[in-house]
Image (cartoon, rainbow over all chains, first blue to last red; front, side):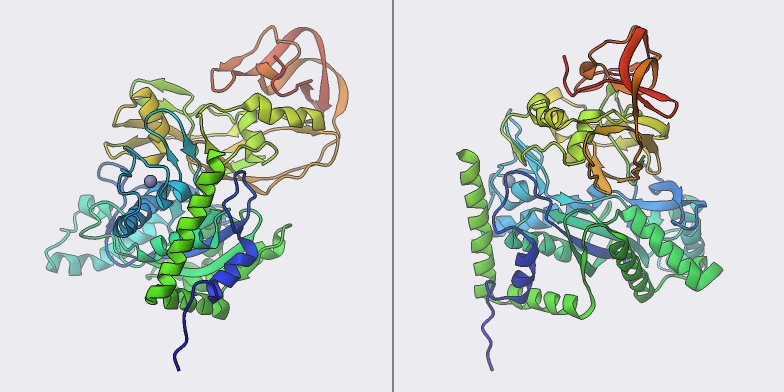
Length: 326
Length: 208
Ligand SMILES: [Zn+2]
């Protein structure tokens, strides 16, 4: 049996239409869809702002545990910049925004400019970003990660990689470090949401020297539908820490974390937040999310459906630019 | 009470290669952050229109004071030659150096402010602030302010919004779009509100 995949009738579009506007509004309406992503570093990564040391910040462990710990940071621009680059490469393939030079001469017309925002170089015109993010915080303390680094140091030296000196160790984080993060798309159309989702799922390298390292798997673990933001990355990480500490006790700092336990803890935190929220929050996770992601996969694999989606994206933007020029 | 859950940056002063963030939250920025005042997604001219956007709030009898620091710590961050989106506007308009430092406010820092309203007011539980649209958490407590007169206000206030300019103040912050002062004192008593031990002067958005 051959089923015809189309964008218009896809499960994902139907689900998004329930929450998102069908045209880009001129003023904020705060119709939010948040993507909850567990970013898993599969290889070493250089997460430094500048210089030699890892970017760390002193924050509270959890929301129940108020002790202070140093956490490795994944600054918000380090998440968004590579994802925008992915999108811009995709645009060039499609012949969109060919004259658009990131940060230098932004065109103000391509999906990247209109969704993630831009400011015109020569004088006038600025569009605010409709994608909101926070800095990401690793779950365990920097010291705990350092401990697992020492455990792994032998294999690195035999590979002829990092020498194992304290100096070099500090520059990198090791595989299996998780950053629970949320990207919230605000007042985007379903076709725009797909563009953002594509950028997240197709980006695999983050951090400095990302051609050689910084391989990241972005696991989408939930989508939240709401009229405002539900929680920040820091609050999410702190909630996850509390739960993992309850379950594992002091072992939390001894061994690398498993992805499945991180995901489970993330979902627990989201459900608790949704219960406590004054405004309704719908959580799409588990089977519903899998069905939705399967529908996304079908869509991108079908040439016709893909074209249909991109035509709609183009139309959404054309309509918005026309509204602006009035 | 407003608690930052990310690094906050807005440029309040530039000293050589360092762009600093003053330990305060401007009340106009707060009115937008709460979604009480709205501005469009697209700005044709990059000049904000505070007066026009805030005027409707005066009609509704809503006012929010600037937020004073309760516990604020700073952190210095370096940025390099890679052009970063968050510096974009300034970089281009002011010929920003292509490397330098940003003194931002760290997550966990807390501020306190007061909002006045005749009718019950709704607050979002989370807001976004500053150049980086950093997330912050709100904790709201309802109080019954008493009308009265006073001569001294310990909280951060916006001179632009006051019918009576204070005679003295302990600190002044020259931030955009209007300057803010703390520890204001008036020679003669002025109208205002008492919230417990704290006196707040009568204030309206963009009075002057
Ligand atoms: Zn563009």
